[in-house]
Length: 359
Length: 150
Image (cartoon, rainbow over all chains, first blue to last red; front, top):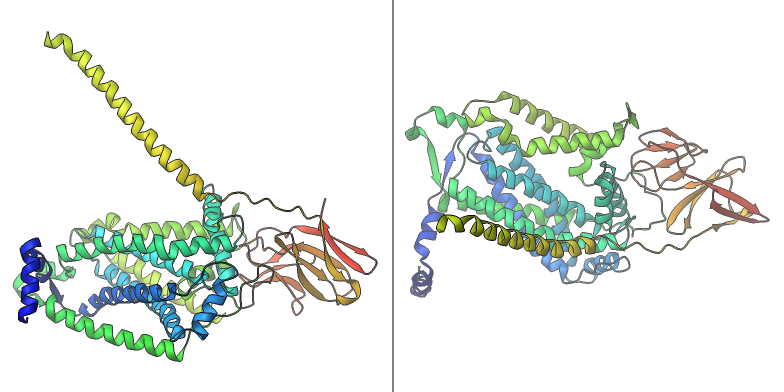
């Protein structure tokens, strides 16, 4: 550190005792084993989230919400604003990569059983962030006010409305009325740029502090072998530098995707046009969308869609509270049942996403 | 003396507890209620529409369909191959998408989840749970009108 840097450090240290903080941040070690590669996806997700914050703020400089303004303002960003096409394209691509990366992170944590005692809160905050990520995706999708987004929002909010008793008021709250209109756009805009980022930042803070405080999770096998035989790597600087290199690679991938596959804007939404053929939601909702297509109209006395939505809700809830019903992993035993469920879910999502994509 | 005082003190303290607790809840309610009420969108005064024009009879081809604005709702008007008119709410009973007439299938079709309805609005295939609501078609001279079924 040069002398000016040292002086600044000493000045701050004298006032807020940085020493403790530096110690707190510097003590983390990353376990090295054959599944270590999965540790990188948390960092990649964080990086993609930061990209979303930056590009989101840039888009806010020109984006206008409203039925008569939203589509036109995105057109303006993409055709008139310098590098507007790039910023928007990166925002859209990074959103998708973020969901993918968070998904990989989630499944790796699941298969490693890293959610087990004492990391239950880390899992819960992570899952809540994942649900928020889907909320970000769903609300952000509507903001360009194009045809696909309009119908995706109609279907998505109607699904909320199908839930018995509480569904209808929730649907009206989300839509800002009975139908999807400019009022819905205003609300989604508010959720997307204010409510969700606020909640997400809070959860992310807790998540990161916990990871720092409890250290990285070690695989279950480590519990059966002596401590001295475990290989580790200091988080700072060894792991962080590797992480940064990966961030650079991800940034390059994003640039390539944004330049060679720019995000399309489509046609402006028209409430009196039929839903276009081949309409699909974003890929991460596709497996649920495809399932809804296959469920018959009536199963016993229940509407098929109600049943489908209830099953997905219950499954999502059970997934969220895994650390509390998988007691075996917390005791340090191998729980194959969770592996089978995880595998089933991965295969289900992949198969239904591909089928939904092709049909 | 002290033992005589205690129950009195207790009830005084209880009284204060209820007053403070009660006013705390009243305060919370006075904040939460307006916020909740604010989030509930006000009812829009809808203009009551009794009938709308679809178009001129000679301009609507046989075996075709079109969507017209009926107030704030879309209504689909289908003219069959033999010249008959049918009109239904264009909102799919499954998940709210807007349906269209598919010449190649000869049915009313929803692109979102592949739901199909026949010319009586009956849900004949796919996930829709109910038929489409029917509207009345009136031909006056060369003009085709749709109105609500009474």
